[in-house]
Image (cartoon, rainbow, N blue to C red; front, side):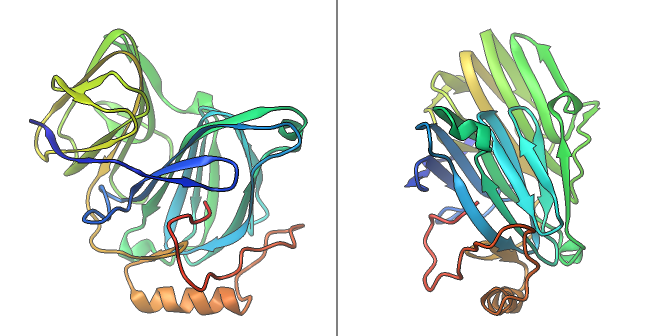
Length: 293
């Protein structure tokens, strides 16, 4: 059987919307370079309210935001102001350090709105951890999407067969959005050392074995896996392992002393600030799993 391990996420209320966190989890820190996997929503936001994730820091990782429904307004300490809508990709490489906020756009607060999507963190190769921070937005029409065997496939990042995503990554990676229609079937090649499938909806099978909704199936290395469903959606993540990483709050690094330095830098206001934003999330005394994004 191609499923090596099945993980049920931890469910958290992040202030008006639900997040299901599959990575990291006890016994498994990463899949390829993916060290954090959150399924956001689907959640309904009442009129007059919205999501307000105040400015907070990251180091030595990249954040990747990909939405199915709703919108976020991203602002960061580089001066970036970028709205993200479904199908687009926001890739922010923190490198030596970046600060950002994520909020509901003002026009979405005027009426009831919804939010649904995936947010991941990708660890950086050790030699790239202290790269200068950068941000890139890729519109939905820039991301390769194609149909085969009743399946719509979006190559968010990495390479699959002869197709390559334009999204810039710093290590081998695979990130797919797969939508099934009319009894669709797709066979994943064993193209990367580590691969996993996350079921957004019920009804998916992996080589004939049912995968419950909203669970992460870690695939056996070196084996192909045939995914099938009459309808619904799943995500595929994978890539090559980068080695152990330390994680504390929003900080990820191959070096524990770098985490400690980042704590001090945030506590003493040494990070750059997000223009036109006065708020900030203070350094927590104790870390919980309900971390900001």
